[in-house]
Image 1 (cartoon, rainbow, N blue to C red):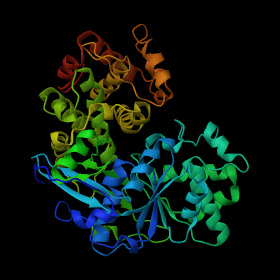
Image 2 (cartoon, rainbow, N blue to C red):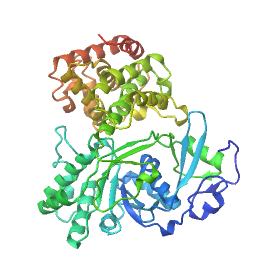
Image 3 (cartoon, one colour):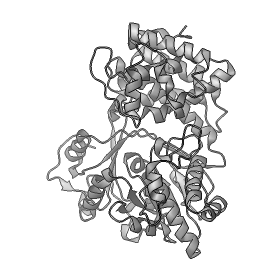
Image 4 (tube, rainbow, N blue to C red):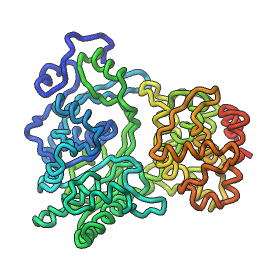
Length: 500
C-alpha cells in the first residue's frame, strides 16, 4: 500500500469494483450468486474484521456461496451503518496494520444484505425464518444478554416486558430470535444455530440461557422446543479492532484512492475457535483458518483472563497516569512488568492446559501485539462499560485466586484503578470520561469513596467479595496508594512480586 495519493478518489460500491482492482484486493466472486445463509445481529467493526472476514475468505475459494451474510442493525444508532451499507452496496475496506508499518488492504464482500430492524421489524424476523438461513450469529456486547449478577435472565427488564406484551413488534435481540424460531417451528422448518461472538465465558451457554428464558416467558412450548432442537455453540473470538477514525478514512482515501465512509482497521492477528455443534450445517470454516473443536472453554478462558483482563489492568491505570494508547503503556517498563506479573502469577494459575497452545508463548505474543502503534488502540476504549467487563474478565480470576490462596495484588490494583478512574480526573487533574451502562450509580459511589474507601464494592458485581476480608483489605490498600501516590508510583510498586 503506497503512501502516494491516487486521483481521482473513487467511491466504494459494486460499480466501482472493476476500477479498484489495481488499487486494492477486491472480491473475485460474483456477489449476485451469494445467498445469505447467515444473519448477523450487531454489525460493527469487530464483526466486519472477524466473521465477515472469514466468510469472505471462503467465498474467494469458491466454498461458501450459500453462506453469505445478511447484517442486521437492532439499535436506533445503527441507522448510520444502514446508510453507509446502502451507499456502498454492503462493501467496505478492511485494513490490516502491521507493527513494522506495513499495511494490507482488501475490500470485503461477504455482507450481501443489510436490514435495519427499526425500519421493518417483521422483515428481519422473516429473513431469519427463511429456510436459507441456517446460522444466526451476534455481537451484542458483553452486557447484551440481560443476565443478572446471579446468572439468571432478567425478565423484569422494561424492554423485555414491552416485547412480551401481546402483539408487540420486537425490539430486543431476544424477541427477534425467538419470534423467528417460533415461525420456523410453526412452518416445519429446522431451527437455525445461534452463535455468540461476544467476549463471555461459555458464551454459548449464556446465549442458550438468555434466549430460552425469554421464550419460556412468552411460550413455554417453544422454549422446550428450543432447548431440545437449537444448538448454541460457544466460540472464542480474537482480533484487536479499534473504532474507525477520520484518520482511518483519510488513510484509505490518500493511499488507495478509495472513498470509504466506514473502513475497518485491525491488527493482522486473528483467531476464531468454535465448538463444532451446529443444528443445520455450517460453512467449511476450517478452510479459512477457523479452529473447530469439541470444547472451547480452555481457549476462551485463556483469552478472557489474559488478553481482555490485561486490557482492564492497563486501561484505568494507564489513563490515570496520562497515557492515551495501549502501545504507550506497553512501552513503559513498570506497566509491562505489572502486566507480565498479572498474567504469569495471577491469571495463568487459574487456567487449564490449552490444546496446542504454549501459554508462555501466548503471553509474550500478547505483549508484542499490545505494542502495535499502527492500530492506535486507545485506553479509553478499554474503559467503556466497566461494570460489564470487570465481572467477566477480572473478577473470576480474583475469586479463584482467593479460593486457592494465590496472589491477587495486581488484579486488586486494577479494580482500584477503575474506582479511582470513576472519580473523573486523572492524576494531573485532567478530565476522564466515564462511559458505563451504570454511569449514574458508579459516579454516585465514586463521590463517596474519599470518606468510605469500600463504597464502590456496594455494586452487585462484588457480591461475595465485599465479605472477603483479604480482598477488601488488598483493594482498600491499593486504592489508598493510588490516592496518595498516583498511578505511576502505584504501578511501580505493584510491578514486583507483591503489592504488600
